[in-house]
Image 1 (cartoon, rainbow, N blue to C red):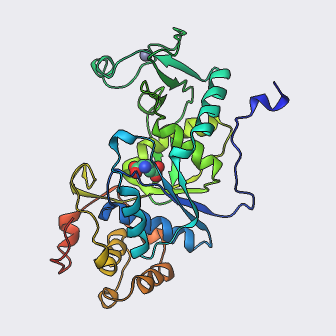
Image 2 (cartoon, protein in one colour):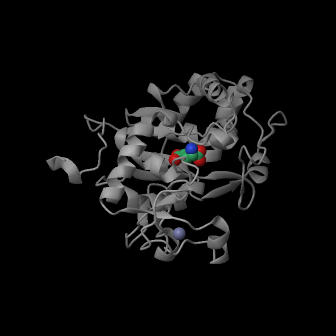
Image 3 (cartoon, protein in one colour):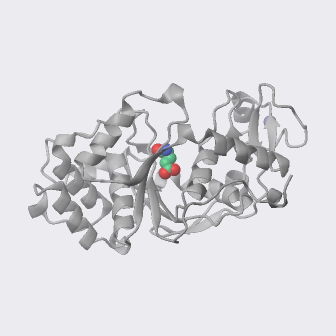
Length: 318
Ligand code: GLU
Ligand code: ZN
């Protein structure tokens, strides 16, 4: 035991206080238009601040992964001229840090084992009410939860403004390590954001609620949470986002220019039709020159059909 015992075992590698953003796809399939919107938004937000834009592959859930996806994602980003900085971060290589943090949380009394099944929690209304908090259960066949004692779950989003979730929803003791031994998304994402010195998280507004939950974990880990910017999410219809599981069409890399043009328009930028068939590089250059967070489409969702009806683009499927 040493004197730094009460500090969490995560070393931030942001030494120079530079802007650092990241794009963090899960390799469950190829990128689709919704993922491209998040990538373009994060890329431009970083590049217009002379910042770094990192690529993190969230490969901590092997059963849901497609072995080809990591390659497809990289190729697709390259085809769209979305070049990331530094080497790719693979969550599958971060186990040691996650374990160290989990151990530290345990030592601090900030986690506990839980025996409740999904079914039981569902029967109680879907939100975990802390049933196992004081039971002192052992690890055997149990999941591990974060003891969430935070009081407020609010933040200012750079695009959507003041965001607030009630404590009885966002204050849940969420799972940090699953019963099957896999690390949970909240834990992995927060630890990585701290370690890789992420100063701003730019992602889809489908993650507004996770963002509110994650704030408590940043605090418990003595870290200043990154700034938040949640972009409009592409939906088929209200609440039904384009997703790999929802069978959204993979991006067609051959149409990179058109895809980029549409992503910028989707984000709300007044992109002139004349550049639609320009090179990806030039379209992104236009995006950087005209990037203003204040002129983005400031709603959590945007419906694809009504968005696309403004364009004559039959070749584009989503
Ligand atoms: N990999 C997750 C996703 O694709 C999380 C992304 C993030 O934290 O930005 O939804
Ligand atoms: Zn429980």
